[in-house]
Amino acid sequence: MFEKVLIANRGEIGLRVARCCRDLGMRVVAVYSTEDRDSALVRMADEAVHIGPAPARHSYLNIPALIEAALCTGAQALHPGYGFASENPDLAEVCEDHGITFVGPSATVIDRLGDKVSARALMAEAGLPLLPGGVEPAAGLEEARALAAETGYPLIIKPVAGGGGRGMQVVRDPGELAAKYRQARGKAQALFGDNRVYLERYLASARHVEIQVLGDRLGNLVHLGERDCSVQRRNQKIIEESPAHGLPADVVRRMGEAALLGAKAAEYTGAGTFEFLVDDTGDFYFMEVNCRIQVEHPVTEVVTGVDLVREQFRVAAGLPLELSQSGVAPRGAAIECRVNAEDPARDFLPTPGPIEEFTAPAGPFVRVDTDCFPGHRISAAYDPLLAKVITWAPDRAQARERMRRALDEFHVSGPGVRTNIPFLRRVLDDPRFADGTHTTSLVADLTSQEPLG
Image (cartoon, rainbow, N blue to C red; front, side):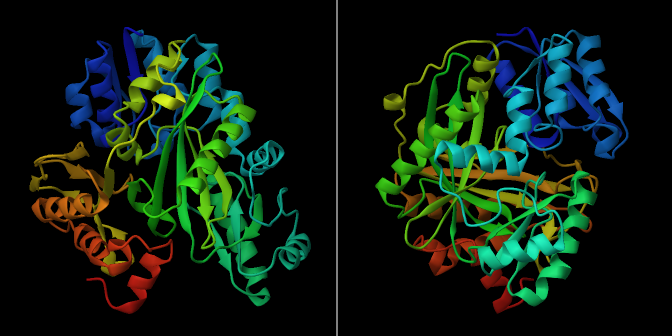
C-alpha cells in the first residue's frame, strides 16, 4: 500500500476515504478551502493543507494547488473521491507526471469515457445496446432537427461533457427543439466549458439501474451486482437500493455481462459504474460510465461485504483483485437515502446555514456516512448533501421499514436550515415505492400532485 495519501475532496466522502486509510495504516493528508478549515476531515487528518478560498475553481478544482499539496507533504497517492476533479483526466495525468499514484483509472480511460460521445461509440462497438440517437454531437440546429426526426419524440439533449444530470433538456415535440437546443448548448458551455451536445430518445418512465465494476491492472474484472437509482429530483439521485426490486434475474445477468464487456473494451481499472436505463419490457440501454467511486457505493458494500474504497487502493497499488465473479455473493437488501439541506417546497432550493442540533440515527444495520456535527456550517459554495443513511435487512420490506425508523430518528436544526427528510419519508410511503413499481417519473408525479412543504 502507500504510507501517505492526499484526499483531494471534502465532506462525507473525504471522511469515508480517510477512515479507509486509517484501516489500512496509511497517513492522511487533507486539503481544505477557507470555508472548510474546521471540518471533520481536517480534524481527523494527520496533516492539512489550505488550498484556496471557498469557490471550488479556486480550491478543490485547482489542480496545481492539489499537486503542490501532495508534493510538499510527501503524499505518494491521491484519492479524488467523487465530484470536483475526480473525473478530470488532467488531474490523473499530472499526478502521473509527478510520480503520484492517482487512485482511479488512467487519464486515457477517463478522457475516453468522460466524453459521452466517445463513450457511446466505444460501447456500441463493444456490443452494448444504446438508445436511438446520434453517436456524434449535433453540429448545429439543422443537424439537430434531422437527428430529432430520425430519433423521434420525446427526446433528450445532453451535454457531451456532462455529469450528475446537469444541463440536460427534454424535448417533447418539434416546436420546442430550437429553444431547448440553444438552452442545452448554453448550459453545457456554462457548466462544463464545452457546448457540444448530443440527442437521444427520452424514456419518460424507465428504471435507472447501474452496475458496479472493479478491475485491476492485470486485466481481471468483476461486477458486484446492480443498484436501482430511479428516485431522482432534477435528474439527480436521492434514493438508491440494491438489488433492483423485481428486475428479472436474466436482465440483471445480461446487464452485468454487458458492463464487463464495456469495461474490458475500455481497459478499465479501479472502481467504476456502468449506468443503464431499463424500459417496461425489460430491455436496457447504456447511458454512461462513471470513472470514480459513486455517492451510492455503500449500498453495494453492505450487500456484498466488499469495501470498495479499499479495493480502489489495492488496485492503485498494483495488487490483483481478491474477488472472482463466482465469489461475489450479495445478501439481503439495502436502501440509501441522501439527506440534503434543501427545501422541497421551493423546488429543492439549498438551505445553507449553521447547524445547531444534529442527531443521526443508529441501531442495528443502520449506517450513516456524514461529516456533520453541531456547530458545523452548511456552505452555499458546495453540494447540500448532509448525510447518507443506509439500512440493510434480509429483504427489501424490512430494509424499507428500518429506513422509515431511521429517518424518524434523524434531527437537524439551525437558523434557516431545512432538510428533505419529510420528502424522503413521503417517497418511502408511496405505494409505488413500497411495492417496487416506481420509475424515474416518481418524484415528478409527487411534486405535481400537491405542495411538498
